[in-house]
Image 1 (tube, helix red, strand yellow):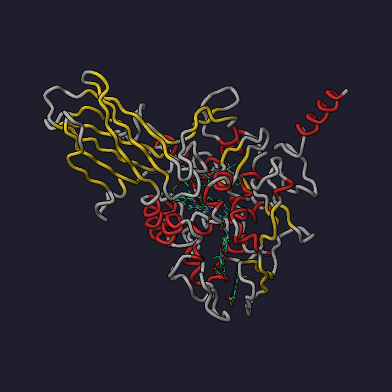
Image 2 (image 1 turned 90 degrees about the horizontal axis):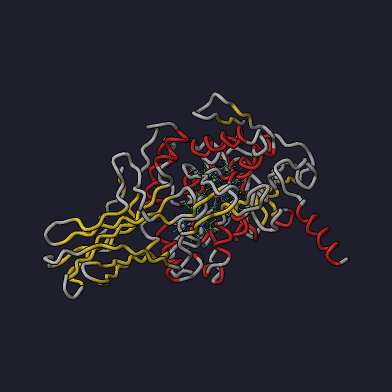
Length: 491
Ligand code: HEC
Ligand code: HEC
Ligand code: HEC
Ligand code: HEC
Ligand code: HEC
């Protein structure tokens, strides 16, 4: 009898409120997305304001946002191409899912249209402010989280309550604006706010495809009350201090980020937030030629060049055989590196060993003439496969990760390389480099078309050591920390 009830319970849980084919209901009006609205009427795009209207009084926030990934979350050609593939393969079932985070207004107003003739695979259009992706008024009219309505009872899959209207919600308790009403929102000051969109689980099998928020939640940063906002809503220089001092941005001594939060504001505020939301993407905004893209790219490169640290060790094995171990530390990211699309983003090691006679003893991870990585390259990523175990980069096909090689916050990974040292060598040099790119050339060619873009790489770190052949003692060392002049981008 007990087993019977257990079986019934499992059955009920199994058929919970999940599924791409779920019917629209008051609880979940735009399935499979978890967006709800609380205004009690059908919404129009004109219920939200255009960012240009906010720009007049909030120039500082606008300057950061314009050119950010949030400002192009809908038009991003890489996203549009992948979304178009999903639209065709899944017969429209995922339109609200993908749109939910990339254009919440488009979903809430049901104004998104698929055009099979756009781009290589098709594309989407919407109306007015919905074209601006995650815009000012999207974030500042979010009034709560629907985490308890999701299939996994966690933030994610656009678990947001939208309350478009005259009340702008934010971190200030006593804000007064001549243009709009204001309301204090604790939610906006916490990672959970971001987690509503920076956590993605599969719509039917619930697999956590992207889990930046989860990674943060179980990290030392969460333990120290350091939120996403502390690293992504301040300049990179400040974020470096946040990570090193394990202190939230507003508690740092002399952070120098105070000022007027809006024209006509009652008084200067202790910390006005940067709205560039800089991550690692240095390719898409410049590709689209949007205003502010170059500054955004420079910040992204700076961020990437201050996240990791390399270490090297060499051991003799037997005969001529030696082993070089490269350690990669995740020093300053509040989540794994890479995070989010861990099956598409590429962080990899390039290792070269040469001896004093100029002979190359080992080479791994050097891009070939077609901008592709050799098979044996060590890439920090998760290998995604579908339910039959076949490799796939399509989020809607992913059933599990076959291998997980990302580096946890404040964690490290060790990678071994073997090489033979010739007997007549007096010394040898190991050069290790850590590189980042948003996606491989094959993915770019597939999504955007052959030759549409040559994917740039950013050199994150470099460490080179010369060793004596007999005693394996370090003779000389060079690293990217030595000089401000780094080899930044290869293209
Ligand atoms: C992705 C969501 C998001 C977008 C898009 C966004 N904001 Fe914000 N904004 C926030 C969050 C979160 C805070 C509070 C951060 C904190 O206190 O930790 C904030 C803070 C603010 C504040 C309070 C003062 C300050 O800067 O700290 C103002 C004013 C503001 N935003 C205006 C804007 C304007 C104008 C735009 C568009 C140009 C915009 N925001 C776009 C999330 C967003
Ligand atoms: C829960 C919110 C959410 C949902 C649902 C979602 N995305 Fe995203 N998507 C994101 C976030 C956040 C990023 C940025 C992550 C990053 O850059 O690290 C992103 C980035 C991407 C990118 C990379 C863009 C680039 O320029 O590199 C692609 C492609 C993409 N999403 C496709 C999709 C598709 C297709 C779907 C639907 C099957 C989808 N997304 C559903 C939140 C979401
Ligand atoms: C006519 C000028 C003006 C316009 C236009 C304007 N704001 Fe404001 N806003 C202000 C002022 C002034 C404050 C208060 C600043 C303070 O008290 O430090 C403010 C405060 C805010 C806050 C903080 C609320 C809180 O309690 O934390 C947010 C968020 C905000 N505005 C968002 C927006 C958005 C989004 C738009 C565009 C739809 C917009 N504002 C348009 C002047 C304006
Ligand atoms: C309404 C959904 C939504 C919310 C809320 C949101 N984001 Fe995003 N965010 C996105 C999407 C979608 C993208 C990816 C756009 C793309 O690549 O096309 C993105 C991109 C980013 C990126 C750029 C990633 C890169 O590769 O460079 C960062 C950083 C980021 N978000 C941080 C935050 C933080 C911090 C918060 C909370 C304060 C937040 N986001 C809140 C949807 C959201
Ligand atoms: C201690 C500082 C810190 C905190 C806290 C932090 N991040 Fe990051 N984040 C970084 C750094 C450094 C990078 C660049 C390395 C990378 O791209 O992986 C980054 C990269 C990203 C990216 C781009 C990843 C990619 O390469 O596509 C996204 C998206 C992002 N963060 C979102 C978030 C969200 C959401 C939170 C909170 C849940 C958060 N971050 C908390 C430091 C931080």
